[in-house]
Image 1 (cartoon, rainbow, N blue to C red):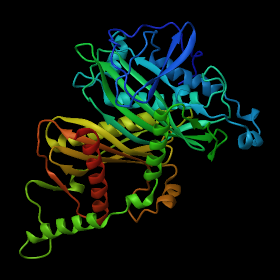
Image 2 (image 1 turned 30 degrees about the vertical axis):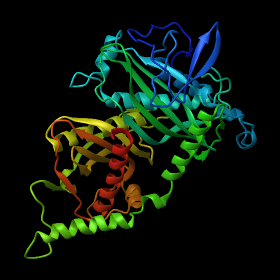
Image 3 (image 1 turned 60 degrees about the vertical axis):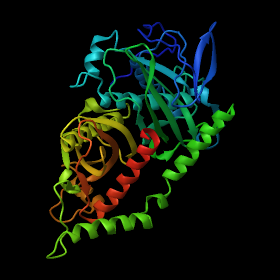
Image 4 (image 1 turned 180 degrees about the horizontal axis):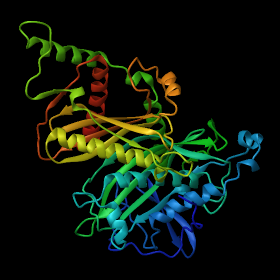
Length: 459
């Protein structure tokens, strides 16, 4: 894409058609409104709460996307010295400083409706994922802009990219394709060079009540535009209220827990679980020690479904790499297809967890997505999608990086995606069973993710 005209936050746009904005405010998101040309903020309690939006004109989402490109295009890294990058004072910002809200105008924009329409007649979740990624980048740049607007310069030269997606919880997966969608977000944690961006989606139901569709937490990192391996400092985050302080502290603890290796090692209970499982499987065989499955079980490796494609320039972001939102969309659509085939019926997406962006994907790479069912419990299925790249022009280089055994294709892993699905039509799906040790560790990881989702948003 090419940089477009300057983005103006309060430019004349369509009003949000048909939205009834009179719900009770609850939670820690913050809302901005224009009162007599003076920008003010007020608290909107709890991420899961329903906000009370102001009636000011809504800014369509395409302006949010174009503003990012314009902002990055104006960055001049050569104007900053190494001393600036290390020592320039960066004043801390508040949560409300970065709050922004946009609309996906499905009620008035026919072309936008077609773009978002799924085969089932509702909104494609994959397209929503792309919007979430753009929103996270936009809010992160707002937090680090000179005057709180992308019309102005950056406080330091920086490239902001998605490091991981901590979680996306879907409160309603069946999104209407003819009603406007509100997307809002803000920074809820800032470290030395990383930030957590929390985003929500809302839409009116058939009665005109505003419904909370999903909440997402993205982890963004700031890098030097001239050397992507170097970190660039970001503005800190300070709390103005006890609620904000609690939000920041919770995010800090969650990020610390995610990065701890101890939380990824199997516990004694999990080792016993695998031992008991294999004792049961082998106990069914009266002749030798070969495990036996019933008709209601399936080996994990048998659930594999893959797709491969070439990365074209149309999928690139402003840095010339493949857009992270595109990778999420492709992974989700593959996982959804695999889950639907596994359940032999309709499935619903309930959550996305621990999405990792380990390595950039370049134009021209051959991109491979491999999906597996990693754990099942009643009507719930945990899916994992691993993305890897191969390049016919760089096979020796990739082979050296990945150490493939003889006969294997030289690939490098780039991304990992985890999805929790629900079987809507079949309440008892096949039980997935790991056959090898590496599958057993994947099984335990899937079990943790699914149980967390059930406890967090289903129970």
